[in-house]
Image (cartoon, rainbow, N blue to C red; front, side, top):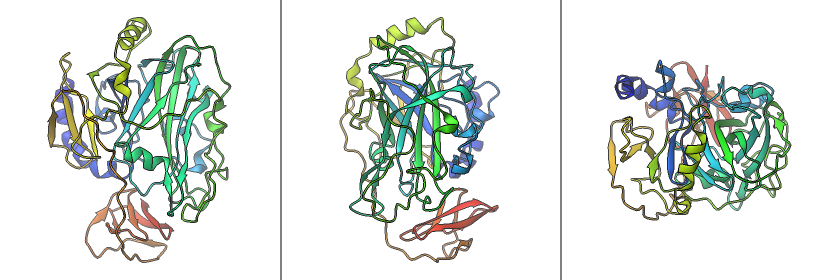
Length: 402
């Protein structure tokens, strides 16, 4: 039934593909080689009965962002109008989770962060405004030899648009919300220029740890003029402070690598089957989350979960975001190690320095929230109807609502 619904929504998904190209969202999680579907913004919002997944629901079908002026609103917690996920994934303290994004734009430099918040009950029903988050990961400026530098998001791009985070081994068992986030700083030279892209997932963490770190309310994580939020990345930076509270002392830093997918799992609905699911996950080889990469046609190819409800799955590579109708079957053999895709070098081009512009000599148009100009930009400089090209700084212009 769901396969038929998905096929009926193909036209809608195709129409929204240009918006997907603007920024990005998380498509899935991989835990110990098991693939768990994320919230599909291209189909789920249009389905009467979408699958219950561990990812929090958001109607953010345009892949938009949360701006610093909204840091005091509930939208900064898990994204715009986000509602509780109705399922969860069981993980053990010490497990690594691979978080897969769609293709992230290489112009959107900035830090990658991860937080946990204990639900003290079911995360499926928790009031998100009461969640208190503690930071377990935060990678900011890695190298500033060449402006605008190499950032956490560049490492994510090079890692096949995915991010690996470890659940601290010392964390007490219980139900938690994992808050994963990229903060884009390409227009952060002035206040309200940073762009936050938070995503949330429900986890049931097992283990023998005892730590229950103090946290911070989601609406108190950042301030508009806080450290790491207002920064001109086009100036040479000697230091950079990753935004947010101090990182939890038990957090574990890991080297970025992709995770081999060995099977497809379904998030747990309710709590009655959690123990059985935990046991099943525990028997999966932890070696699947080592540096072995999933073989894919290129850096923008992600592994998608099949629509069928059959227990027999094959791995299908789907080009994101443009080639929605091209499917490439991947032979389910042991995955070979691959070298992460390098961040491409920009080509030189000249751009008009006007504050806003909607003209373009090429005739091509850019989607809402897409880049439309700036030094070295060679793409479209005209925006779709209803949007205007705003000049944030000499390096980055963006299509925003007119």
